[in-house]
Length: 159
Image (cartoon, rainbow, N blue to C red; front, side, top):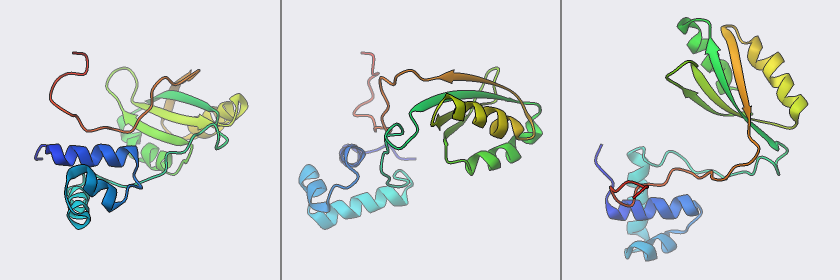
């Protein structure tokens, strides 16, 4: 894939900050006309760089104040497809990551309460065929959570 141009990076950063930006606002940012800004954004969509637009909902205010990361170990690799198919239907499972290491998957889930989390783990997740073990870490506070931002340059963040 071609690297992002500086103009594309500016557009993406603006849209990550406010996906409801108007074509006029984006045009002003990059010094183009609104139709030209729209064309640039449409090209980013066509390339698959912009996958979709969404509202970022606060889980606590939406009734899910508890966030947990659940590491899952499957009993055998042949169970992956069915396991993933079931997880994709679960709205409280926000992220599913296939991982290297001792666990097969890392899930980010939300729950309404500790009892709700217990029910989800014991009655829902562990009832999926192939789930051998889980390890749950409850989030006490989140210091940073942002959507992906395109790099401004090639230097490392730690410099």
